[in-house]
Image 1 (cartoon, rainbow, N blue to C red):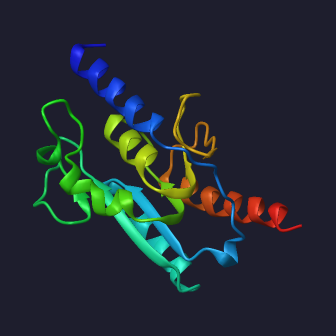
Image 2 (cartoon, one colour):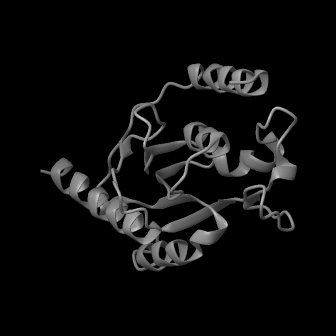
Image 3 (cartoon, rainbow, N blue to C red):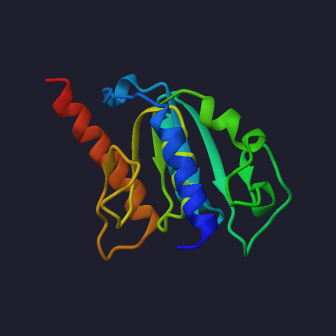
Length: 172
């Protein structure tokens, strides 16, 4: 691990130490606002989620994180490599609107986590965070193990399934 990686990991730990949160699981019918962190090749999964939650009139916000290979024109709900500082940390002016919005549920649908995705996931204000990471140390309240099935639609459907199951158990 180089000096940049050590510094930004230390910086993230400092920011996380300032946060005192307890995960809250809501009944799926009571969810009013959902945030989704995704990558450009996952548009089909985002559309699926949008259609699923729009039926219930849920406020649905997305934040697309582009990698080095694809850098489109910057927009409000996107993060490109040009929006990272020298250390590789997202610039606050690009992420603060999404990260300071309060979500009932945050879904991270990225199949491969990286520092930028971890940073946004861990610091976004959400009552409950769901995603997938092969690492035991991750920033999700619910880490869904998709095993060998590295498919974004499978992950999205599993997130919805387990969210509904948890809420079903919680409402008893």
